[in-house]
Image (cartoon, rainbow, N blue to C red; front, top):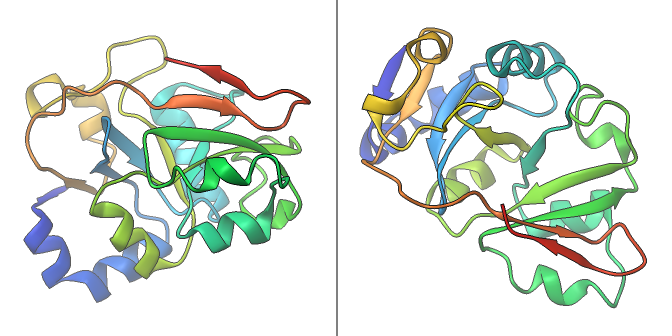
Length: 190
């Protein structure tokens, strides 16, 4: 496991993009809290996160590499297009999929919906360079407190990740869920 700053990440971006695409598991900062992630198209890497989280059946959300990726792979009605204009931001949009092959089948457990984020944070520029969706879930075992700094990082999780991109304490709240897959938009603060 290696801890990186933003500068170190960008100094080694080509090597790290390759490693992340090939299945590395990493902790990264967002606009809200720290996320635990991997290439959402890599079934084995997604399974590693399921084991770390002790979350065998709940679907994961992803950070999209771009709004265009979201438009290509998700069903966004004209009425809900305004939610795309709020991105980047602290929202997870739950949408119906139009391309199920855009993520590994164990991301959303073959459901026809997916949660998608584009945080307002510099790390999204790195994800855009990777050009793959990235799993985004809080850094904790299911039901436990999530990581806000290195002192609150569960040692069992720390021992199972390849990289931590660290930028100090994060005191945000998880993103707001916005259900766009229903007839009426449902907004749920977490």
